[in-house]
Image (tube, rainbow, N blue to C red):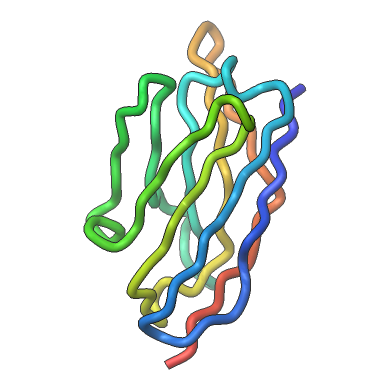
Length: 118
């Protein structure tokens, strides 16, 4: 079983920055894809960004140019640097770890709240 632990959420004013961290002790190198999703009240969970073991990153349109995903395999940690935050970025942010195979396995963290005030 893979355990993912997020941290770094909080309250920030519009235009500010936050950095989220997702720790996966001993596991990150075994996960083909790491990513961040978010879920706002009354909305479905949506993709924010993903990064493969090889470092290839993918972003939702809403995140492009403002958010940066990175991973440090030595520290078993994935980061999401969020700049120029907007009130519409307010959501619970979840870390995803995905292992390819049959079956494909997804692992989720418990979530961290990000609130952006206007």
